Image 1 (cartoon, rainbow, N blue to C red):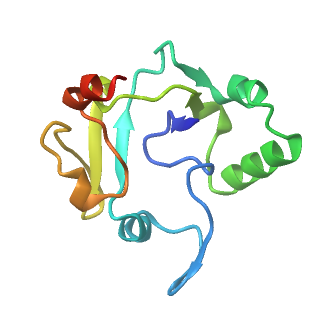
Image 2 (cartoon, rainbow, N blue to C red):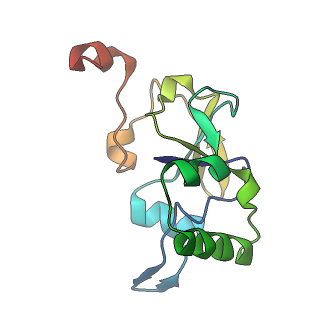
Amino acid sequence: MVWLSRDLDRYPATAIKRVIGPGIHGFPSRREFATLAGGLFRLVFDADSATIIPWKEAKSICRMPNKLQRALVRSAKERGERPADWYCSFEPLCVADALSLDQWVDGVWTQIDATTADFASTSRINIIRDSEVAALGL
């Protein structure tokens, strides 16, 4: 499941776990998360896409336990988030279909070109480029 949010300034509570480590105890800041993960990226998709559904529907489809739902909502609200802004996709989302791809650089979101970005050296996410899709039979 891919978690998405309509709020461009926050990331969903479901996307970030509490971290206990050197210098960090709790939810990492964007700067800390970018360091821990090797990069912080934001993909912007059209919420009207056929594969993107509101979290309210997704939690029922995946039979998320009520206790987990309440914990996610409570954690999100404590940080000023609105679960009504959350969306999910049960299908893979292609970077080429994104309206924009941004990277957190020096404290601001900066739009980058997905076709030239060097994800291998800047992050731990795996990106399958369009040219590789046919070769992989996807």
